[in-house]
Image (cartoon, rainbow, N blue to C red; front, side, top):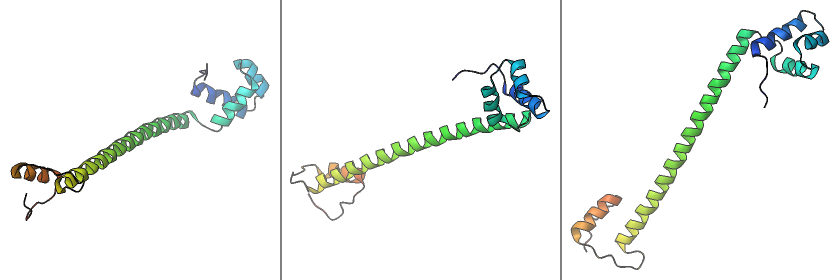
Amino acid sequence: MKKSNFTESQIVGILAQQEKGQKVVDICREHGISQATFYQWQKKYGGMQVNELKRLKEMEAELSQFKRIVADLTLQNRILKDVIEKSSEARRKAAADLRGDHGAQVVTSPGLRDVQAEYIGISLQGKSS
């Protein structure tokens, strides 16, 4: 998009000339702009004062910052959910391996088995090897 040769404050000043009664054709000729440009500016900035325009720009910048924050937090949330899901699957698989649910016999020493069970969060009280 082409950058304007006029600042927003200048644009508001140009639009104010029309509000004071000057003809659009004369304003456009004086500032070297087309009538289409003038009417686009009027559509975008019509009725605004310079201080309102500054406040609008501040609010747009703040909104942009909030959108970035939301996007970052959403990404972090999705990553954490994926990690939790994968670790839950790993826990279930490890617990199934310890119980021997997959038909494969797991041979471990009693001490190692207790450490593995503690790591995946299951209790082996009352079970023997």
